[in-house]
Length: 414
Image (tube, rainbow, N blue to C red):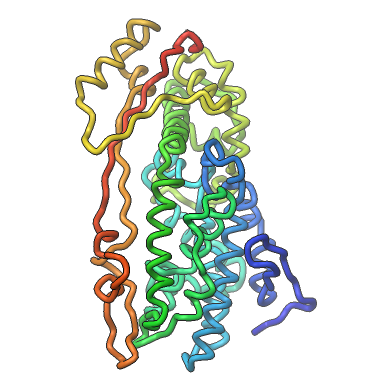
C-alpha cells in the first residue's frame, strides 16, 4: 500500500491510537468534504437528553475505519485473500460511508431536501471525490454500492454486523454514559471469518453476537428512540419545514447562503448537480443553530416558537403508548391552540402531532448473521442461540407517540 512520508496517528478516546493507513486515505481526510463532518453531530439533538453526546460524524468515521483495519488483519490471518487495492478500497468505503449526512444527521432527509437519503448523497460525494482523485475511489464505490462480486466486502461496510454499527454502538454508549450499549467490538472482529465469500462468525463468538444484538436493542429504546430526543428531532424537522414554507411565500429569512439556497429551492435527487453538491457541502450544524437564533425574532408564530423551544430546551410534552392515539384527541389539542392564539389549523399542526417508533434489533429476512459451526455448517445465529431467544429480538416492536404543548402556553409568543 502507498505509505505516508511520515506515520500519522490520531488519539481516539475509545481505541487509543488510530493509524492512518496511507497517503490517499490521509488526503481524503484532509479534503473539505470530509473535514465538514467535524461540524455534524453524530447523534443529532441527543445531547438535549445526554449532555455528553457531542461527538461528531468525523469521530465515528475514523473509528469505523480503525475497526475495518482490525477486520482486514483478522481475515488475512485466517487465509482470506485481500489484495492491497481491495484493502485500501475497504478503508475508503467505510471512511466515507456517512459523508452525505446533513446537519444534525437525519433531520435534513425529511425537511429541506426532498426524500433523499444520506446514503444517496454519500455516493454523490464519493463519485465527486473519485473525479478529483483520478479514479482511485472506483473500487471503494463498487464495494459501497454492493456491486463487487465478493459479497463480504459490502457486508463489512453495510450489514447487520458491520464496522459502522460496531463503532457507533460502542462510541455512542461511551459518550452518552449508557453502559448497556457497550459491545466488545474487537472480540467480535476476532471471531469473523469468510465462507463462500460471505461474512460469518465462528461458533465460539455466539455470545458476543448475542451481547451485540441485545446492546443494540437497548440503545435504541434508551438512546436513539428516547422520547425527548424524538421530540427534539421532530421539532427541528418542523422548524426547517416552516422556514421552507415561508421562503416559498416570499419571506426573506435570515440564514447562511447555503441554507438559503435549500430553503428557496425544492431539491430532489435529480437536481443534485456538482454545484448543488458543493452548496450542500457548506451546510452543517452551525448553519441551523445560527439561523434559529435569528428566527426567534421572527413575526411568524410557528417559526418563532419552534426555534425558541429547541434553543431553550423548552420542548413539547410527549406521551408514548402501544396503541395509536385517537384522532379526536389530536383535534382537541389543536383546537385549544387555535382558540388560544388565534392561529390556523395548519399552524397548530406544527405543535400537536403523532407518530410511531419502531425497534428491530435483528432482521431474519435479509442479510442474516451466520455462524460457522466447527463441522463447517452455516446456521443463522437466531436459530443457534441457546442463552437468549434471539428470534424475539427479530420481531419489530412498534410504539406510538403524541406531542403537544405543555400547560405553560403563556411562554408562547403570540
